[in-house]
Length: 160
Image 1 (cartoon, rainbow, N blue to C red):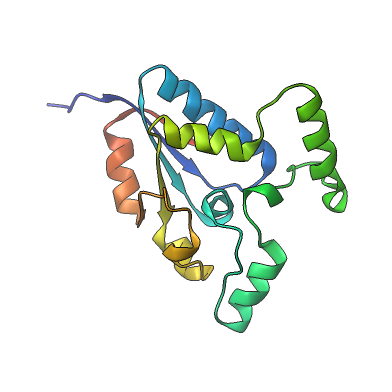
Image 2 (spheres, rainbow, N blue to C red):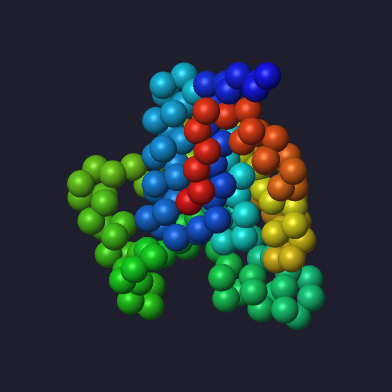
């Protein structure tokens, strides 16, 4: 007998690109506002959305990665038309002119609505991002088995 799915959304956030983070948080907010339980599992580049604005990395490669890709959610660039960072500035100006809520505010609204956010422990280990460099609201640092169990119980599963 198959277990009944819960009114729940489970989402893997693999990308740290501005447009994909907007999509992930917009969907999460819509689901939470509709009464769904929402779990977001951030892995690899998506971890940017959960990082504090601090340097990361202990080894030479870890520090290099932290410098090259470093930053927090405010450093997210568009997946297309980045123009060496000018695209981020341009899109932020365009979105502000249209009254679009900035990414940090979308993330905070998700937190306020009870969206559960988890970091992928394996990705954090590889990228040398310790738990203390993550936002305090991060529920935990977990493995893929945790996410798969969440997804198994969910009506909706997404990968962004």
